[in-house]
Image (cartoon, rainbow, N blue to C red; front, side, top):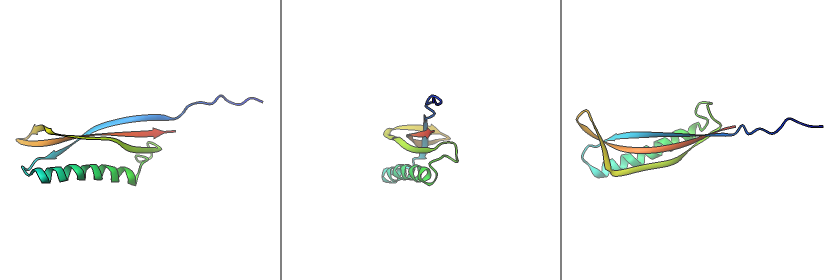
Amino acid sequence: MGGAPARGYRRFWDIAGRLYIKDTGDPKRLLSLVWQAHDDLYNTLSKDDTLAGAACAAQVTRFGYDMDTFAEHGGALWAVVEFGVTAEEF
């Protein structure tokens, strides 16, 4: 007896994004906020790694901060924090 051929329904979705943190001129505070951003992103995914049912498992895979890179908007400087998330669907 034969069965249906095995199919690979497992998919991985790479999601990239940026967080912007307003620079107040205090470098120690800014670095603290960068670490807090990482913790917030990690904790948010830990609470629901299904991304509200859109995936089976998601995790932070990349987090980067270059202290020499800023964005200017509205007369303020913003630190740019890049992140990556991989969501698995099966």
